[in-house]
Image (cartoon, rainbow, N blue to C red; front, side):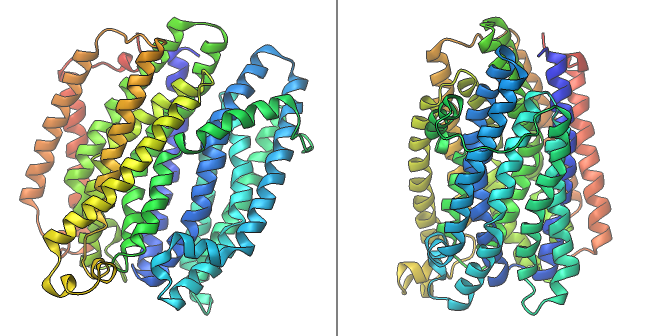
Length: 535
């Protein structure tokens, strides 16, 4: 795929993903306004995060990174009938395995909820609510995993828009659940469980016609012993952690957060929403579009095309991720206060969510670059190197998280909290959830450094000229934008006390001023739109 085609693919994917992320923000606004940050919403976010984590780990994570290179190789070197047979065997095998996993998840929901929310064991009502919600949300895994398989096939045919649009349907279902269904139920939060289940069904149905149009809609068949299916499975195993280390860290953060102050799960969910807005729109888009392109270059033994495509992806990632980090650091409080401080979500919740947002987004450049570097390994069907790196990063993240919780507890805990047991003490101190964001950010930079070292050692990537100029240009533009946003914040204070419409127009003005300052500084430094297409 040429650079212009790569750019079109990224723009197609990211523009539709932006729509999904906007609806995701509306979804979170509706949920927080309807329920606030409390035990019920904590229970829902835990119940939603577990199948969502498994979806990203097995379907969008390890499965997609193993499936797309093999699928692309067969598409480029064999007949369409072979490709259609692979789809039938993979869908039958994946669907069968996930059916068993889903059934086990529903049956063992009490044990799963206790495992991932051990801090709720002494709160029976909260734990029971988590179990009930988990039984509703777990089947989401089956539907959304098959949706990811269909999306991977469509992406390999350079059809990125429809798979990127599918999450919009999930967000619409969840908005309807919070706004329309919740007031009609005896336990309002259960509406969100039904909404997640409906969203999974609707997404899969939505993509089936697109699969038919490329001639790959076929009857699922069990294919455990099929050689191509077994090759995908062999590639999957090492990627279970490496492709989804961020999601693994989030789930482990869920376990730790269950011991912290009530509301921590909800504040963390907002933090990840703001992290995933630029990461999902551009970071994931780059990784999704580059993987088939790198796979084709690898199959064709085109080393120059491989290096140029990867170099282009890294430059675009920095072009977006650095200003996004700066903007979110500067505007975290205005954003949370303007978008979420309504209904049952109060000024204290705004402050708590701001703490974790600032911690998480400080790692945004690393998160984005990792999304681009991982396909460089998977396209060559090297899954072991990222696996080894991810294990090290996972251990580092947990060690950092516990260390920063202890450090913040020592700094912030009042005397009363110090006099009780450790677990009881951390459950009383606000703000300790910030430690989880700091740990995730630092571990993401560690993963980036290790992946870069592994790529250089493999000798498959030649950096293109002009990197120093690119870095200086982006850094200067970010500094100009930061100065403009700082002036805006100094001029307009009181974000948690001003009327809603005042917050809205002030935030809009600051966003527009910051974006204009960044773009203006970029162009003043010599950047041109043709640079997006690469050399």
